[in-house]
Length: 245
Image 1 (cartoon, one colour):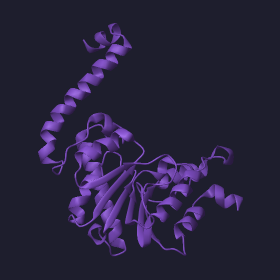
Image 2 (cartoon, helix red, strand yellow; image 1 turned 120 degrees about the vertical axis):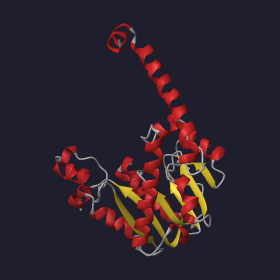
Image 3 (tube, one colour; image 1 turned 90 degrees about the vertical axis):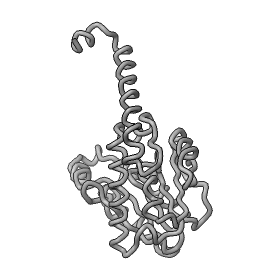
């Protein structure tokens, strides 16, 4: 019956019916997941969740929670935890997949900020999450914050979408808004991406830095006024830059 319907229905109608089924399923999932697994905060609609690759509510919540606990573990390597910081920014917060778990881990002690270039996601956060301050940023710096505003900045699966020029530009901007001695915690591509990158011919290589880690690697950077160590590490890990130097 399903195969027969696929043959006789036009593609546009099939697509509309598929979207309607997803939305109906989404409403049912929202009803059952809201109290049991969403840690008390509303879950964004499916259109916003799909923008970060998690259409199902279960995947959206569990991935966000796992990412945040991985970040917590990484902070533990340097003897810190989320509750150690006073002002936290999630750069590329999307619809709050990671941000929603921060009040619990900071024990409500930190000022929480989020910024993203996706206007609908930020608008949803501004009207839904009372604990945070959320703003829209452009595709290029600057951010709408004063110098040395934050002592912890997070960026999960953001730099993987930027060109090399974009990465260096945003690293410089994030350094501007980070306090001396603060921490920048970001993720980049893992070993599989690095191996594939190294195997490609020189004229086909994409111009972005790759690092190591599995499934994605966390770089911890202490930021100071006189030693931008993160840029030096980034340069060393970029095969294209290394060959041209």
